[in-house]
Image (tube, rainbow over all chains, first blue to last red; front, side, top):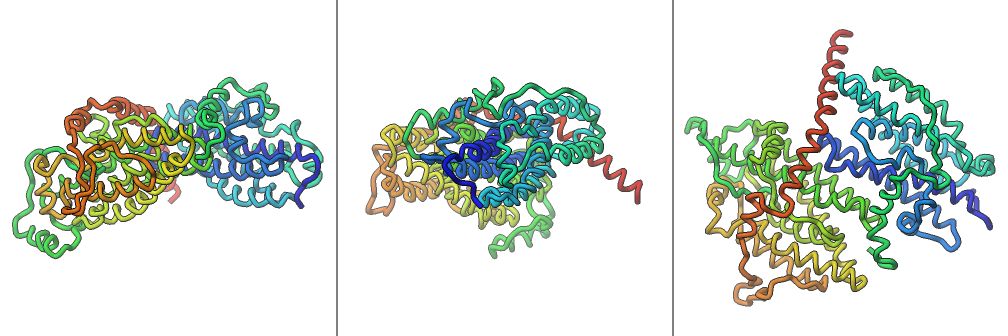
Length: 256
Length: 328
């Protein structure tokens, strides 16, 4: 069942929030290509960024198709302003060291895994299909991030300290993933959307297991005040978008 | 050519006994493949290590000028294609370092030689990528020139290198078509897009011709590499092949190649082209190109910034091995 009707805005907003997380995460991860600690990682990070970009393209294409008049994936990626993006702060802040990137990837991919595992049973056929493909990809992302958190956490004294610092720094941005204030409860009730709040438990169980095995301490810090789902972003988001959108906006109407 | 060889062979040799080299000579005569465990002259081994390493270094340094546009690609489709392309280059670097390792080299040592400037990479990557159209021009011209250089390497006498090149060439051929398609879209787009495409071709044409190396009479290492079956055609032969292949494609693109002397020579059945100013190539090789310092500094920084990560991975692997042996 596809939820269509005179007002798709709730569904559009939901799909955009999923697509924007992946798009912005891909943009940040891609910064590691040709800059990662070893050649194998250039390939792996590139692969993960490509998967996320692919998910973003499917989701933005779907969100745009629900609008009237419809918009393309590129209209949505390149011609929306910062306040119209729905991504979380976890994915949009500037990159730190490799440990920070792996902490973020562990948190994001574990969330994605729980999300897409459920969303593949969505009452919305398109979302279900996108999720069914994505869940296989994010399973690999989660595995990759898990392996690195283990190596860095349980590697050298230096890497342990840096990985712990990364986990501590990123932890306050986790809670935003599970917020549901932006979500129309009717979408959850009709089986179209997954309530992010229900992912918190299984997410925590998985991540806590990885951190324990990596000899890292589960942080005990309050969540950061964020507002990505309402379009209130970190200051670094503007620079990310300026770089991403500049060329397309310099040539309005051009095809590439 | 990423795998071009412009410098003189260095130091003395540890030649195997002459009777043991008979098998090597026989392999060369019969167009057979030399494999890692086969006896081979020391000079052959060293030349190959240097050439394969230079080729591998070129692949990984070549990730930078194109990586420069991933964040700014003008559509999500183009962004995905470009990311996949740069990822392919990392993959090529991996196969090539592995091929060099079959000759007894060590990847870490080869990287150290790149970082300290003792080994080179293709000078083409010391030019800046200034506009999106450079992604098209690099694919079409630089990858196009690389293919002309590399297809004969698929028949190189050293087996692991030849086999790596088969796969590399397939992917490069795909990249070349992508580059052509980027330029085709731009040259059929708005006036500004067409001007962007022409400007990129103007900047990349001559450096691409220089990728084939000096003219034959100024190429000291070629004769030995030919005798060893590493090199199959001369620099000038390959350069001519590239020009002949590219001119008709430029016509399809509706773009001009920046050489007033370029014209069809009926008698030779090839295009004549203007004299190449090699002083620039040699300046760039010496380190005075627009991006030499930047490319190397970026590579060294990534390597140094990643040291703690690689050390942690080694330490973790050692701990895991110890744990496994304790359990067993």
